[in-house]
Structure formats: structure tokens, C-alpha cells
Amino acid sequence: MKTSRPRVWRPIYFLIGACSSCYLVLFFSFLDEFSIPGIFQLTRSSSVTNGRHPLQNTHTSLDLTTEQCESTFPGLTKDIESTVALGSFKIQPSGSDGPLQVSIKDGKMLVYQSERIENLSTELLDAQTATLHQLHRAVITTPTRLPDTIITINVNDQPFGSAFSYTRPAFRPPSSGSHGPSLTRAFLMPHFSFWAWPLPSIGSITRAGVAIRIIESQIPFSRKDRRVAWRGTMGWNSAQNPASRENLLRSAEDADWADIQALHGYDIEVDESTTISEKANTTSTNNALMIEDFCRYKYVLYTEGITYSGRLQFLQMCRSVLISAPIAWLQHSTHLVRPLFSSDILIQPEHDSSREGSHGSKEAWPIHYPPQHANAVFVSPDWSDLEQTVAWLERNPRAAEGIAERQRNLFVGQGYLSSAAEACYWRALIRGWSETVRYENSDWDGRRPVAWELFSLGGGGSKVG
Image (cartoon, rainbow, N blue to C red; front, side, top):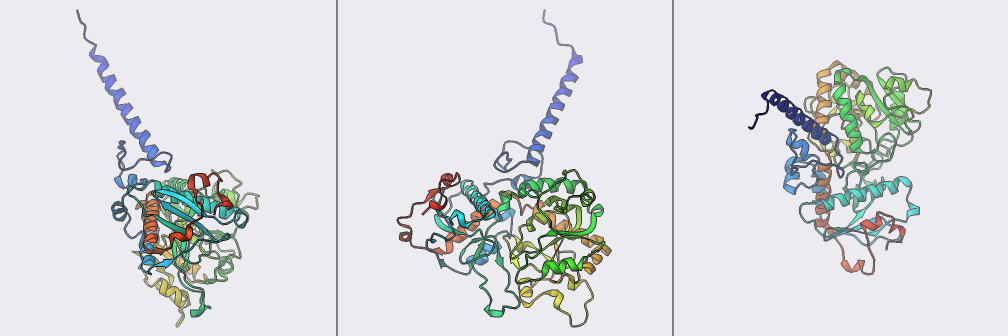
């Protein structure tokens, strides 16, 4: 005779099933939270549903269509559109000492020309390799065919000619007048740190983004260090602000409202669990901070170098108030900055308009945003009102926190520094370039390109012709 299973076990089975389901949900949520593009990735088309907001999965997708890119990241490609509007231009094959040139043909990437290895520093070689990896990733993940084209890529800090570049001047140096260096037709490309930046304090935007997320989840804005933080190498000043860093140190000397120091060494020599105050008391002469540790401060300071500084995007991931002189060197997402000018919140001496910057900077940044709409703060180029500005922010904590929140929400919450936005931008950049570039195919006759896959293994180098 068939016997029935005792009913007492059924609640246990239900309990085991419920626990297993919860474990699976938590497991996949954890993987999505710390996924790295190219290693593990949950996209919109994934069969895994983890209950997160669809945008958070979209921000890790590398295969968004043009329409999806435009709807998810409106305004991202504004600079590309402005550069394309300048009209067509011509390129020719680079000489033996010329910049890198790359061909995209039938969905494949070929390297036509590379600067001689001996002409590139280790840092520039790293930047070149990372940039080519970024470009290749955008090419092979595109959902629709990209146009065939030949691209010139400049990995130097200083832009020149018509090329993909990391930066472009927003305005000429004040002393140069109308005869200063050309503002150049640089097509701005994402910084190489979106792939990797082999500094001990950085690693990559992906790594830093995860570390910053942890810090921001643990420290509310009100409990952050109230000082303004900065580390930097002295002597790296742009023509637009030739004494910027020296003036900065003078303005904050022995100030209790600032943790502003000239950088001594890049290596991080203390354990990551060490607090900022413990790092300050260490006997090491090295005073570098992990890039995410800047997010422990309420106020983070951005200075440009001889041209741009690659730290900008990292600081923009913080829920902290970004303070800067009017930015003189544009990067691919700089146009998303919405500045509150210190001159609009502080009482100025009569007839003193120097705090607003030069005539060129006023043209580059014509819109003054009110505190309730700003996501950054611009101060005098000589930092003379930095202390007053920090004091104003301390007296107006809601305004300060709002500025910090809007910055992180835009660049992280809305995904403008995400891997998806980067891939979208690269593909728009390729299309914009191909729309305006002109060249004669016959000029490249006789030149033997190297497939990217081979070049990436060292099979090209300076022998590429």
C-alpha cells in the first residue's frame, strides 16, 4: 500500500526553497554591482533579472544602439556635434615620426602608422595602448555597422591639427591676444583611464568607481572632512594660469580649512584601511592619496596641468563639491559642468572683476548657474577667494550638499562616466569624424597596415608603415 509523505516536512521544503531564492537574488545583485565590462556584464538583454533599476543595467551595456545612446545620455556628444559643424578637413599619411593612424574597415581595426617606440615615454605608450583598446572595444561591440574611415590619434597632452585628442583649449592664454596658438580642431576622445591608468593610486575608472561607491555608501556628506583637498606636482601650470599651483599653496598655507599639499611621490605605502588622519601622521614622506579617498572630503579641488588633468572624471564621481578655476582645457565631458561662480555669491571690491577670469574664460563659460542648479564651483584663477568660497559653502550646507549631489547624480547616477556612455561616445566620435574627414585612398597605397590583434601583441610597433 502506498504511504504518503509526512506533512511535517513540507514547511521545511518551502523554507529551503525561499532561502535558496534569496541567495540567488543576492548573488546576482552582487555580481552586477561589481561587474567589470568585458569580464562579467549584465546588459539589458541579459536573462538575469535582479530587481535593479533598468538604467543601472543599461549603464554597463556596451551594445546600445544610437537611439538608445541618445535617449539614455542626452547631450553627451554635444562637443562632437560642434566640431563636425566646423566642416570638412583633409588628412594625409603620417611620416615616420607622425601620430598614430588607424583604419576601420568592415568592422576591423588596422594600425597604419605608429610613432616610433623610442619617441614615446612609458606613460605615452600606456596611453596609446589603452586608447586603442577602448576604440577596439567600441568597434567590436557596435550593434550596427560603423563607417569605414582612417583616423589620426594624438596621445600627447598637447593637441595639434585635426585628430582625436584628449583635450582642447577652451580659450587662448590672456597674454596671447588674437595671435595666440590656434584653438585647433581636436575631436575630443575619452581619457585612457576608462581602460586603465597604471598609477598605484588609480588603476582605472572602473576600479575607482567601485571604491568610491563604497565610501559614498558609508559617509554622508554632513560627516565628511570639512576641508578642501588637493595633491599635485608643482610647476605644471598652463599658459592660461601660469602660476596656478604656486598661488594655490600660498593661499592655503597653514590653513585649518584646507588639506592642500604639493605631491611627494605617487606610490601608496600604507594599507588601504588606514584612515586619512593616520596617513597624515605616518613617517613616510609620501603624501599621495588613493584617488577614491578624495571623496572623503566635502570639497575637492581641480587644477589643470600644462594642459588638462586626468583627475577630473575621478573627482566628478564624488558626492563632494568640485572647486576649480574656470576650466581652460576641455575634455570629452567637460561641457556637462554647470558652474556656480564665486563672484556671484561673494561681495567683491568695487570694480574688481578679476575673480571671473579673463575675457576668454568668460566667453568659454558664459552661463552662471545659481546654487540650486550648479554641479561645481568656479573661483578666481589666482585662488584669492578660495577661503571665502569654502566659508560660504560651510555657512550654506544645503547649497553645498546640493551641488555635490547633482555632480554625483549626473556623472554616476545618470551614467555619463559609465562604460556604456564611453562606448556610445566612441561610436559617435567615429561617425562624426568619418562625416567630415577627407583623404585620397591612393595616398595609402603601398602602406601595409597591421591588424590590431597583432599590433596589441607587439607585432607592429615602429615597423608599421
